[in-house]
Image (cartoon, rainbow, N blue to C red):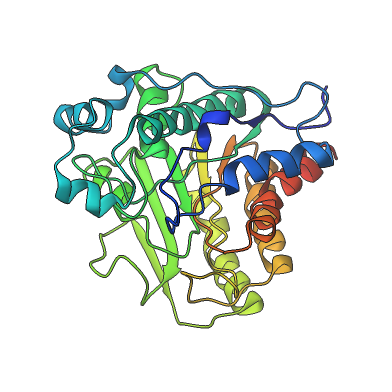
Length: 304
């Protein structure tokens, strides 16, 4: 048995962006370099996904929206809402990242745990993208696995600092996917959706209060939902130094969070998929190291 869990990466995760764009696109390639330097992916290296096919995208998104992204014909107001240019490079990245989460999910069913080095595009709804999110990779992967009969009940644990509003809207009438979002109350999006369980946090919350709140919720949630697979959005934007966050977690706090969520799933033999979610810092090296906490933690738990 390998001592490293499967880690998914594709060079296309880093799209070409206009100079000075505020989305930290370089974090994806830098994250991969950090993980390789530390030997986190193991001897076999990264698992490389195929870009997701159009049919699979249509399981979670409308025909018109999928066509608009791929054919580079999105209306200007939709592209503005996404915040990324409607270019070939961005469309390819969105398909590769979604394929990455789908591959990670398949590998998690086989190995118990797997992580993507992208993913967590939780603001994308069926008809639109938003907040730097083009395709909702978790929703697409969940729907594909369900369509194949690989899983029935799905649980989404979204701990990004922003509410997973797009995911909540996609699954609002679907009891087979339980959406749990714990996020900063006063942060984006200003108009919240309704997840199956929303926990809104006060500005400035630190490690102990945050982890205590999570501990009040997670065991009962896993017991009541009894999922066949968990998708864990491990956004690092609750960090105190994040440009777009309003919470005050430390690196240590993020590590404890990751260990708690992944460990709880593994203890119950529930396959768990980690996606990186949001993280915003002008220092790309510092940001990549923060995202790498997910993958390092997965490896430490996997090799025990």
